[in-house]
Length: 301
Image (cartoon, rainbow, N blue to C red; front, side, top):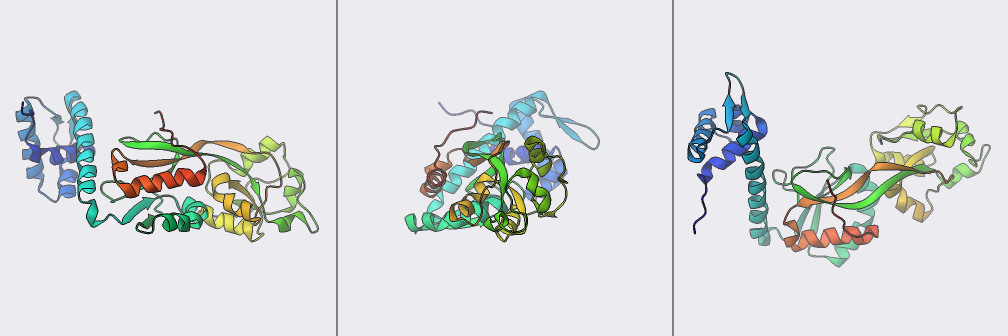
């Protein structure tokens, strides 16, 4: 029995208009005219026999039916895009596009990447460290490592590692005129800050220290630079476990105190549904979990 389908050429126009809530912006995205978007949406509505948009003079709004239909159409178009990528994979089978943060790339991923390439010499990793979340379809990203709560719509999100923070410093700071032995000794040392959500104020309060200025010290937008400053003996960093693990293992950094604070945010491996059908994506995802010493666990959102 043949499927009952709408005019398929109308769906990209409807999807773009629904996402932007603007025919003009949809036209710009698809490189067509405003009139072309309007006609496509009208043809789709006539084919369905229901209105999808409420139209005002300068704006459009999805009807209840439009909201429900847009969610399904958007997901279907994403699946088609993933399938298209997989079908054309032989042309780019050896290139894997990975998106993550600058800090995770610099302090965790890149130092370990040689092991992935040794095991998979036919796969070339292309690493993007934009500060914004990548769009898998439009940006051509195959897989991402994101730091957050894991509730990302329309994609698979698997918990890679939870995160906690604690002070870390160079071994040099444990000797000298004011050796770092107790949290109270922090008043003699420079604090290093990055852009993490748990800051020195929270840690000092938990440690019961009230005579240290939690905002003083040197600040970096890049977590990677903040870690490097700590390695060079610049001061004491409230270090994230994943980002300082290699430096702790190598003895370049150490934890002078036992107190750690758990973050409500974690690291997640994120990819489009069906992406694991591509060998290169599955290989990289499995390698990530192997390196982290954890097992894939889907986030329940």
